[in-house]
Image (cartoon, rainbow, N blue to C red; front, side, top):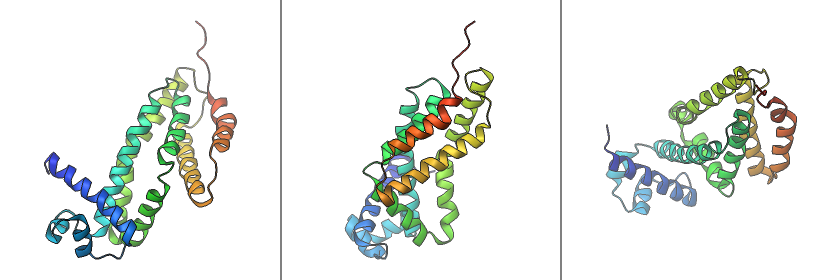
Length: 200
């Protein structure tokens, strides 16, 4: 297993390499990429045998940073429905102003992943699946505790995930303001699922 400093070096190289690829294009040679990063080509190839490996590490870094940001927002709430809404809003807040980075990584995945596409998809699942399971478990517990209306927790989490991703794409493509959509989702779906604890 790689030592922590080496993992940090690899992550830093990936983030810097993506910036170069974004500036100079996905077809830039690995020699030119190494030159721009001020490392030797064999060093670059040691860490990243292909561009798709660079994209994979950069994506994992971005998603890990996103997860940390979102978890802080979720921790500000105690009701599972409030936590779910906080998650949706926090993802969109995290990416505001960084849309170009998300779009570029998506394009890079589509054009350079090749046979590594599944590995790159697995990065997202590896980062977020535990949080999705935890969110669904909080909804289940809320139903048992009588503070969430009966519903299908897994379907609810899947719907929130689809809305989260879909609205982000809309903002990138059209500049859509997301607050009205957030408000509609809250008033139409989430608020009706929220129950206050019964007085004992």
